[in-house]
Length: 73
Image (tube, rainbow, N blue to C red; front, side):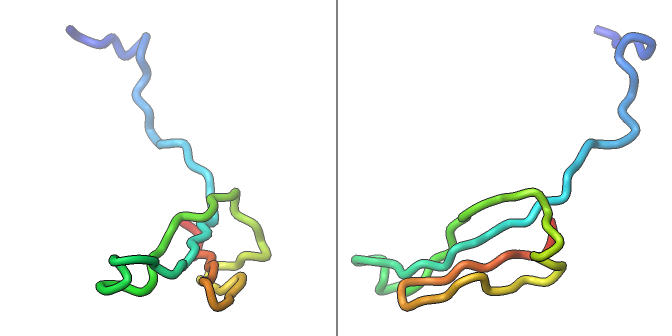
């Protein structure tokens, strides 16, 4: 099967959006805690916001875990 370029134009770029990724560090419970006491969980992906900045930073932290933003992806 041959694609006709007049009907299927070649894409010269991929569409993209800038996002901020929020990762949550949470304490591991039960038997898994023998090997690792913390794990990272994807908490949120949001459109990029100026106040998040360009470097990772801690949003909240407590005894049960913390949440961090990543640099823009």
